[in-house]
Amino acid sequence: MNQWLITIQQFGIPILFVLGGIGLGLYVDKKLLKRLKVIIKRKTGKGGDLTYNSFKGLTIIWFTLGGCYLASIFLTFKGAVVVHRALYAVFLLSITLLISRLALGFLQFYSSREGTSTMLTSLFETITKIFILTIGILITLESLNIPLGPILATLGVGSLSLGLALKEPLANLISGISIITSKKIRPQDYIKLHTGEEGYVVDVELKYTVIREIMGNLLVIPNSQLIASSFKNYALPENKMLIPIKVGISYDSDLEKVEAITLKVAKETLAEVAGGEAEYEPFLRYERFDYFSIEFTVYLQIQEFYDHLIITHEFIKRLYKRYQTEGIKIPFPIKNAYVANENSDSIL
Image (cartoon, rainbow, N blue to C red):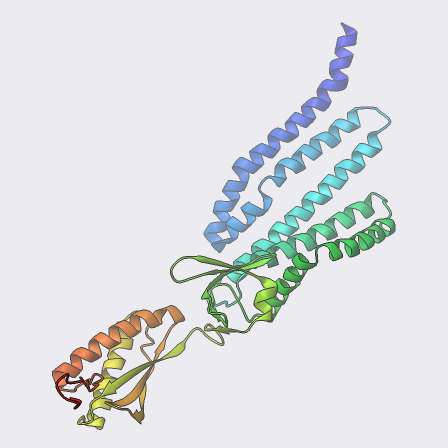
């Protein structure tokens, strides 16, 4: 009986410490963190989500480690020092994970703020995670008195061999980093490649840049291919842009009247149709005497590239209707047809 009591005292209390740590961790993670999230969210908005997502799951690990540490104190065995170091290493790694989550959370919060042009990409997130985790692992190894010199030397030789074997993936990775740092291509920018592909940039990943066409299809382009080609970015230096719309009128038109009416319709279109820049003053320029009409171009400003579809659509409808009301003619090409007369050699 006494032996059972000794056994229970020797192992029961340490087990209770471990189970108690797990239980407290679950309570803090499921209850207290959610309450803290609500309180912070009331005061700072998105800060509650950032805090909750960063600490979620880690409190269970910390309380469990605390329970294991207390349990190891009650247990008398030779490997206690090794266990303490292992617990300390796990704690340092969990802190590293917390810092990584907080860093990514702050970057996401900053990039999503209104008026901020910088958007976070998957590649940048991955690089940030790898950097922070690498530093954390090195600090953990150093705290365990594990020499880093041989490890770094081995990694250096291995990296050289790996680099030769993975030449193409590494080229895409470096190209992706160059794309991000140059800021010439950002998520949500509308770009057009010299090969004809165009669309909105969705993300810059480790190997590819993903572009979504207006029709909804996704284009997956290797980073090295994208950075080696020429392209046009319709979102730089700003999203606002001019769109030219060509118009032709008949030779018997009053050009002053045509200009006044056209600009009035253009101004109304920009002010009333979503996507137009209401404060902008549109203008037109006569360009040439064509074969059957006098041609000119109207310039309107839109808020971003996709808006040119609806603005062009509405402007043409309104201008055509107004020209009909004002008696302004839009001529169409006329071609003389010559038909051979079978009964004679003349041409009609």
